Length: 146
Image 1 (cartoon, helix red, strand yellow):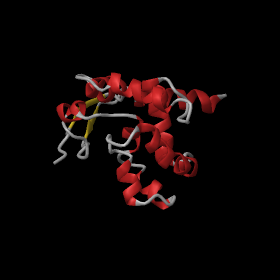
Image 2 (cartoon, rainbow, N blue to C red):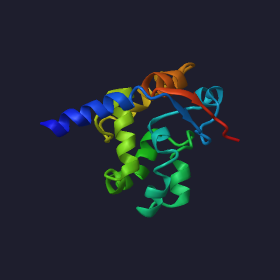
Image 3 (cartoon, rainbow, N blue to C red):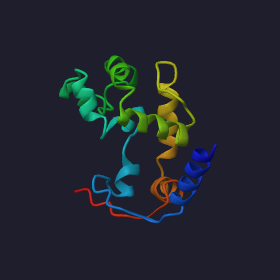
Image 4 (cartoon, one colour):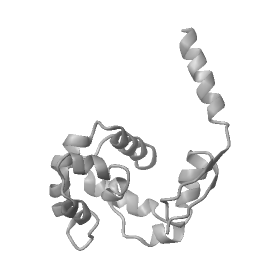
């Protein structure tokens, strides 16, 4: 079909465009790789508002990033809200990233621990190059957080 051919050609050409990105909420890589990360790093920014609108309290949200709370307890807090936000555009971005970088199609009670392990393995020097430059084709990213 002609539309599909045109769509493919447009996407192919867009992938060759060099990008300069003002990613002002992204901390320097050295700060990122020093963090203890798990599945909830995927929900540390854009989905915040979705989770609050789904009924999660700010206290519950903050608890997702408290590594002193066992991962399984944080999952139990999160799971009912995930079901409410999983089809939002921000959650779609989470799922696309999950597939592209960690090899999972979904996040659920059977795989959140394994996803967390993969995220920890991926969180090392060069993560920004792998994600921003190699995958997203970003030539320069201005990471001015803080």
